Length: 213
Image 1: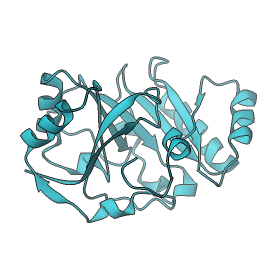
Image 2 (image 1 turned 135 degrees about the horizontal axis):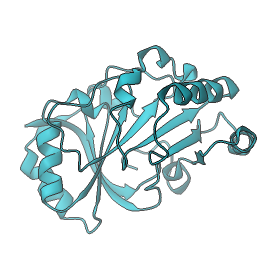
Image 3 (image 1 turned 30 degrees about the vertical axis):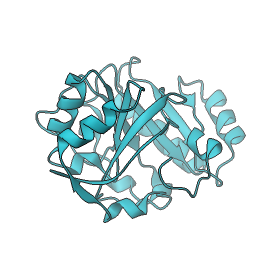
């Protein structure tokens, strides 16, 4: 059994997979309290689900892509087994996670990790663990949500210390309604860095206040 906040079928809004139909599994619980978190309801709400029921629901949708998000999926001890079952069923599995918790032992690394840098604007920068990011492999990626120039510079410095291979892409997105996408684009251009500019696509396609998008 695994405590799940919600499941839904939508459009992937972030990462290099943005724009693709995706089945989402949102876990309950998170040790972080990011200032701009838009899923605070996932901190406590949820119900117990069997892993097989989650896999069956994922298979009922035509999209090959499944994302396990949160909350914080790495907080769920059942995560490795769920991921293994989804992968064995033929799904491409993304896990959206922060850089605060280590990669769970036994996690099937056929999955793709999308790991968030939490900059100072989030209020959680002190929890970022460089050793967690160094566990990333080609096929994984990094993203960050940026509120201002201070957040941007923090993330650049963080990436410099990591010195990860170019095969691990990096995407920066503006905080929705707070940071200008155009301004962020200018910062990326002037930096000369290989960084994608991302927009939280799901908040443009759907009501940003609605659950299950």
